[in-house]
Amino acid sequence: MQFGLQHSPYSYPRCPGCGLHEAELRGSTHVGCPLCYETFPELIGTIVWEHQRSAVHHGRVPYSPEVRFHIRREAYLNALEKARLDNQQEEVKFLTDLLQLLDSHYG
Image (tube, rainbow, N blue to C red; front, side, top):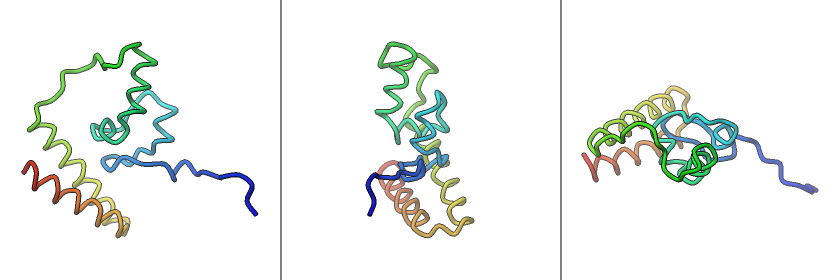
């Protein structure tokens, strides 16, 4: 009989681009890649607020939609290649579907 939930840090969501886990991001002020901003928007918003006392990050100028598309696609392709090498079939299917969706909307 289990009295409490035991959570591994790896049971939390992770970024499809760089593999950063939410639990790792919680203890850091650095994200792993541009896709982290899309994967963890609320958490990153909280981190930015705590450090800048503003809901808006005052860093670099955002990329154009076309550039963001290519950055996102490249990150997904890299994650797909890593998943194939690691023989992670579910991750391969997920990323393949994600790339098809991305290409159908923006490609």
